[in-house]
Amino acid sequence: MQMQWIDKQRLRREPLAGTFLNLGSATAVEIAAGVGFDWLLIDLEHGSGSLADLRGMLLACRAGNAAPVVRLRSVDPDTVKFVMDSGAAGIMFPYVSSADEARNAVRCMKYPPLGRRGVAGVIRATDYGRNWQQYFQEANDKSLVIVQIETPEAVEAAEEIAAVEGVDVLFVGPLDLSVNMGHPADFGHPDVANAFQHVIDCCDRQGKSAGILTKNGFIQQHKEQGFRLLAFGSDSGAILSGMQNDLAELRS
Image (cartoon, rainbow, N blue to C red; front, side, top):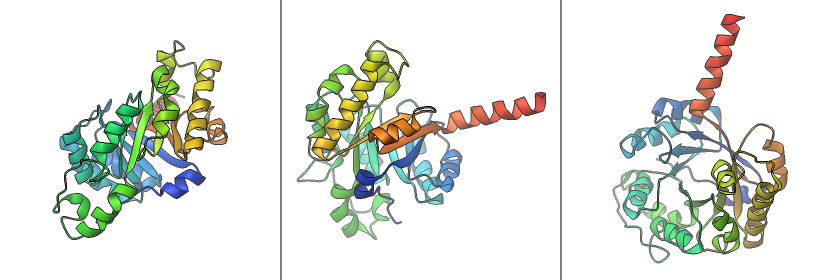
């Protein structure tokens, strides 16, 4: 198995396109992988899938070259180890609001001496031992640590979070952040927009990348602002809009 890592140098230069997969369906993952996204987010925080479904969804990513990223519910070392051993290219950690929380995420993700991830040879990520040496040598550098910025406290600490060694992306959760700032879903509100820009500026100063779950009407703006890890839509949203359009055609 050839690991599908995200090219971090490319990530610093240009936007990488992804989407959220929250149905827990390997079939949906396979379809998305074949479309040509740069990366895919398998959502185990708000999605319908479980850890028991994860292996099948990661296998389905082989339908294309998209790097699979998994979003967890919390920073749990045992879960992180299982997800990375299963062949994820990176993990997205929600609600990270301090540098200490970011450092804990990094420790769970990385092998010693950078972290405390347990080492095993015969795992899916190493092609069941056939590529163990290569995987062990490159995993610390190439695995992607994404921390989500979803609270005013996280925005305030963005500089310190971005400065944490091993953190690659500060990913804005726009809905949570807007709600926690008192402006639910008002992504154009000056306070929310300023918070977005502050996260980008902190990433630029620290040599990290900013990401966001974008939406219609904001995609070009977010690209021009400097967001690099971009996600748009979801498998469930695509099915809903597609079926609504189909029904509208039938009713017309």
